[in-house]
Image (cartoon, rainbow, N blue to C red; front, side):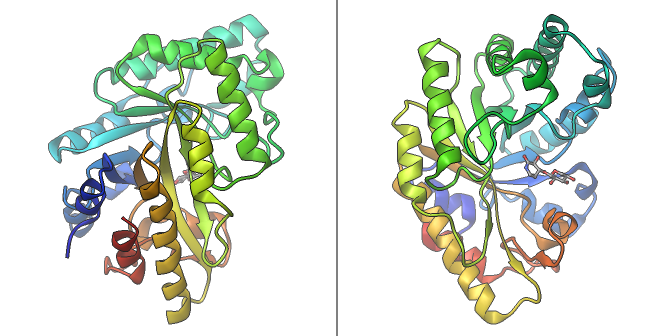
Length: 316
Ligand code: XIL
C-alpha cells in the first residue's frame, strides 16, 4: 500500500505531515512510523514553539524543544511548519500579567516574533504567525493583544515575521474556518484588508478539528474563496473525533469523513498540504480536552492502521 505523503505527492500536493511532541521521540515503534518519508514529509511541533515554551520570561528564550524537532525533521527529510508566534493560549503569564501599555506590548510582540522566526531562519516551510484570533461570529477574539493594541497587533506580527525570515510562508491559522460561515467570512475580510495594506500574508491554515458524521458544509467552496484572495491554504491540524465507545460503523463513517476532507484539499490547486494533529490515538490531544470523545486519528493506540488511513489514501 502506498504511504500518505506518497499519495499526497502523487496528487500534486507538497506534503502530508503530522504534529509531534518532544516526549514522543523516545518511543521507538512510534518513531519508525513518524520518520518514514513515504508516510510523512512534514512535521509540526505540537507544543515546543509556543510562547510559554520559547519565551517563558521577557527576553529569555528557550529553543531546545523546537530545535530537537527541527533536527528530527531534517534527518528524516521533512518540511517543518512553525507553530505559533502569537496566540492567546499557552502564552507566557508575564505577557498577560505585565499590564504593558500599547507601545510596550507592540514591542514585545515584535521582539518575540523576530526572535523565534529568526532562530529557525531558512529552516521552515511556513509559520502560523497568528493563531485563533477570531470569534465564531467573525469578529476579533478578546485577548491581551486585542485589548491593549487593537487589531493592528496582527500586522505587527506579520511584518516582524517577514523581516526575520523572508523564505517562510506566513500563515493565519484558526479552527471552525473549515467550511463556509461567519468565521470564515471574517477571515476573508481580514486577509483582504491586510493585503490592501501590503501586510505580508501568504496563507490561511484550517485547523480542521472535526467530528465524525458532522463535517462542516462546503469545505471545497471555502478553500476556493480563500485561494481566490491570492493566498495558499493548508489543512494544519486535522483530526476527526467521535463519541466513545468506538464501533465499526463509526470507524467506517470516519473513513468517509477523512476521504471527504482530503478530497476537498485535493480538488483545490492552492491547497498545498495536509497535517494531522499527531497520527496515533496514543498521543491525541482529544481525550484530555473533549471528555468522552477520542480515537480521532488514522492509527489506533497500538499503532495499527484504522479505516481512516484508507480514507486518506482514497481522498487523494
Ligand atoms: C494542543 C496540543 O496538542 C496539546 O498537547 C496542548 O495541551 C494544547 O494544545 N489548536 C492549536 C494547537 O492550534 O496548538 C492545539 O494543540 C490544539 C488546538
